[in-house]
Length: 475
Image 1 (cartoon, rainbow, N blue to C red):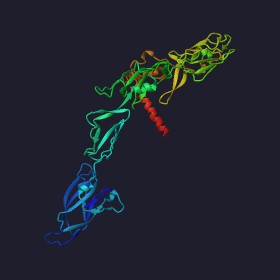
Image 2 (cartoon, rainbow, N blue to C red; image 1 turned 120 degrees about the horizontal axis):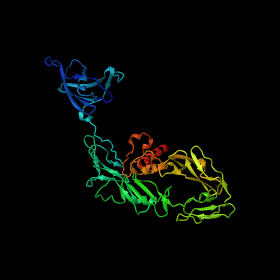
Image 3 (tube, rainbow, N blue to C red; image 1 turned 180 degrees about the vertical axis):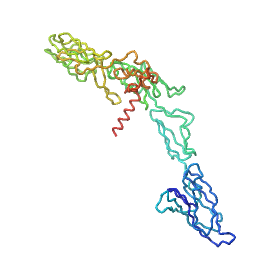
């Protein structure tokens, strides 16, 4: 017979017996039981035989000597009771008594259904935890019980790296653990995707990968592993976004997506500063845009941005020499050097009063990740326009620390250059953008502030962190 009590921590067993015959004096009214216990960790233990006086019914068995035989205190899940003299006595009921100090129930007793069954009926099938796979998923069509097989499926932009002779599967073992996956899913990038989506040229693409798989035909000059770095040229009449450069640097991101700037159609140069305020354009300075000029005392003229990146009319207006702008006053931060009279077309030089600083103007730049970056452009002069206004507006100028050009992109993270104005030290402060794939600090003892961290928004580290934060806010 068995009694199961999964919800309590029992300390005593009370057994009620019924005799089928009268005992003789020689039998001394003694009864013998063999007791087994099933513990919470599924251990089955045979206890000592219990000898008790039949006249004492119900019988009380103290369980504490048995449950304290282990290094740690385990709770009994069930008691299995067997009569040694089965044809003489019959157990009619069993009750579990709980120590009152445990305060586990109201009356101190727990009554359970009693049935004839083996201790093995308390055992549950072994089930492995649902397996997890980075950059992939596990498919278990028949569940995760012992002996079941699950197949490994990598994400679209990932491939399985491991034993090619075996189909990638894992099996649930008797110990509740999975067999070794004998491989992993590796994110990959296809350079052809970058060529198609980022308008880069197929020619002169130079890629470097830290992970090599000799003999694996899945990897070649176009299929590259995660963290691979490629340098490429934009297509003809294209430039890197928000830049005059035709070179771009791309890196294979964590989820098999290329990170870095895209190439866009080349823009025509900004019209001369003297024309500022005299024109309106249909599409900025992009190829195909048409700018209409309203020149003082002259006919309206139109100039179109050609596919070559030049304007159809280079000098649309003749600027009268009599137009004069007010000379800007110097401030505590910026010093202006101008002639006594500032005619239209003339300029003033700018200089920060503090040594080691540059005069810059601030503009917003939209990144591929969706972030908005404040972009600084150096300003060496301000000019008097034909509309008799200064450009750029002196009120929009500020001073920032000068970049150390000799240390940018040298393979060492220089915290003074780790900012957008200095192109984030040429990528030296992020492992995903560094040429060596590692970050090395030129002055480690001085790296105690935020400028020693990876700050480049185009890096793998910050691109996916922003995407995660942004998706969280949208929920």
